[in-house]
Image 1 (cartoon, rainbow, N blue to C red):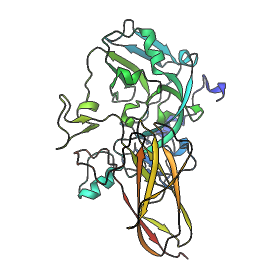
Image 2 (cartoon, rainbow, N blue to C red):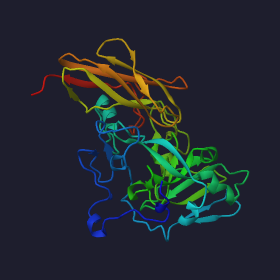
Image 3 (tube, one colour):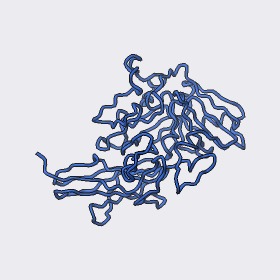
Length: 372
């Protein structure tokens, strides 16, 4: 990564050019799926080149328009009852600290919500995600613990909550242990480039293996507390609410943290193929864990092992593939992944009112026919 990006800002279009758009980067339909909110765009599953997701097609999830922040005047304040001495960092301060890079996947907890709704004949509230609210990047920045520890963490500190500088001041607490983990990061760069505006410039949190909402973008403040922190994002939203999830007061259900194991076929839904030899590819992801195997099943056939391609690391997806010579007609491909804790994708998942964490084995429809 070039040192030239140390003090530079990413190129911004003119304010006039972005006035009618809520996000900055282009979101062409040949790369991105528009959910209709003007804020949220998923990657097309058949447009995933390589292991790392390019910035131009990394999914977007925001709760307010992308803010236009100036690194020269931006600062990060760490404060709260859980530190002995509040501390403020400038953008230049961060670049002078030890930097680390790590590959991590980020996925929205609402990914596949529309498929969940179709299973139950129900349209959930919230962003109407298909399968594209997921992406993997190399994140470069400062370990969060290296920013917190100079403020003097108190013995009774228990929760850490980053807060965004967007219009709604998005915020989501995490336990102190997660904040101090080796792979919880304040990211300054993405795929070797200064963070783009839509992805959190000047700085964002990356909370490995957890729901995307925990990886707060445009962070400007971090509260460390000696009391558990409760905000709408861990009491009313990003919470599993339903008969199988008793309330954990003051939360209406079970707050979502680490994500479960799930898989993705890199084909449109439904897909159309020719009756010639094919290589079917996809990704599997297991939250904080590592995917160790992926199996596939064609129609009513037996489960077979797919091949995994390196890298195979925790908190990031793995690529898989298998060969298939399909016969003309309609077919179903099913895929299931297993992680290093022995957890395998289930056939079904319990209902929850907000349509989160839909991760069962999916029946992917395929039409095979000769094409002109």
